[in-house]
Image (cartoon, rainbow, N blue to C red; front, side):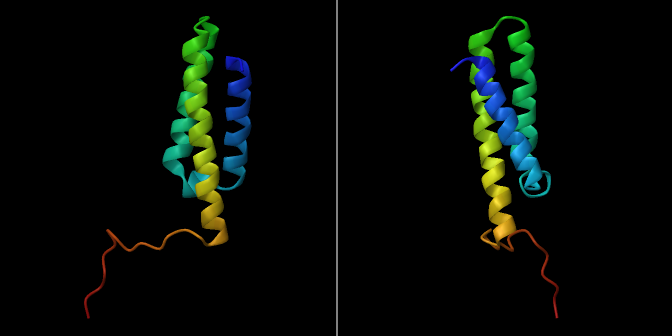
Length: 90
């Protein structure tokens, strides 16, 4: 698959993740996917196709992870951890 094809797939997955509210539930993965995709486009513009494809592949992986994480939160399957939360004393 070409760099352009991977970038298109990553872009589509990122749009789906955002529609699933990944900016709220998977902020790290969403932001990082966007940054990788932006850099991949920049590298492609400089004819660095191999590097662009590698970054686009990572963007796709992260966008898919953001999509899964957001879907888990929407369906209520997210783990309920209280680690790091302050518990009021009685």
